[in-house]
Length: 532
Image (cartoon, rainbow, N blue to C red; front, side):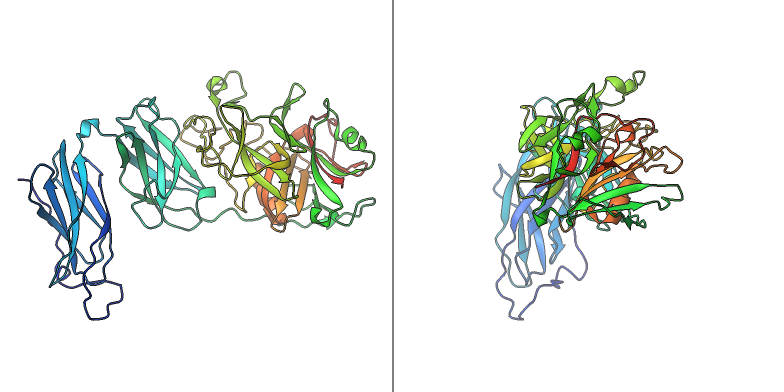
């Protein structure tokens, strides 16, 4: 009939190796359940089931053609095994009942079967992993999909768990567009993973025919980047309530000159609130702060802008302004990536109506709706392009309704994790594996250390507004990874980078504290602490 693979293990077929408690009475066997069958390669089929018994000595795998009356035993496995791989047993294009039964020395259970069609390989959707890689703050891999109709709504991606044989019922992320040969590069960000934990990972393809999986791979992440702790001095201030404190440092940053300030507010005291301000036209932070007639305690510059207009999302007193739009792969006109557009999510910081601060990735869907996510659309410039954010991409959005919020990016910290580094892909310089927000060359990179502005929140709900000088003799600035580590050292667990360079500024009352060389640039959005 067929060539059978009989799996026998000496001494185990007749002696139970069960880890379950056995009362010694050999209670009646319980049959297995949740039998599943999937084709994993050209000649192999994986059968899995749930073990419900404590007194079996093994399991038998039974197969019969759907058009024949008699089943045949094709394999056995020892007690407590819950899977078996059949090789060269099932013929393409034939339907079978594939079943499993438990047995011991004196009895056996009924066979629990499922109907399975051994599809013709040439027509079968497939996902095959090339390589899964362990990274500092992500896991990433390359895989190939085949026999998939790209315009039909078919889906593919990576799924994972800790136990093995992951399915789409476990953790998953949909994949980006495949290249012309069906090759996909996909990143799983650290927002979806735990450090120093081994994961079992499979690529999947989901079509109208069902879900098909690749072979299984294993990967893990190492430790997150540590906090940078600097020596901060409390700055004496006048006119500020006790719920706001200001600190300054001139500590060296990785051996370089550095000058930075941060203001921290406990808005739970009820006398201060955090706000986003959008002036009618570009104005310096000095003029914007002064326009509030002494009701603005601290103000910093906000989001990115172009031609006098904010280029991202702003929420002011519950009203949405702007959106997160597709971005160019490069801002340099001679670069091939200049004409490549990427749908992205961007880091967004704000508070809800209860004054609770949060940082998420913000995206705009096809209908112009603003959605917020706790994991990014893991775009990889030059490699991985995704469709627009949606209610399932990159994942289900969170139910955040901010009262005040502003997008910029990248997101520096989320739940204490730094979600990026400066690892490059095989394409080299300016092609970063975890630059998910596709930040340009003058913002993102290991040697890019301008003035910086950021906002964040601590584990106990306090809000931090941070700036540092850069590109001057007294302060060399900070790259984004250093910035995230500094904010972690201050105590932030969530944080977002805002516009830097010549836009960076901080007002404490009516005093502009940082260097204004070469100028005090007018800006179109600001963040601040205001009298409530």
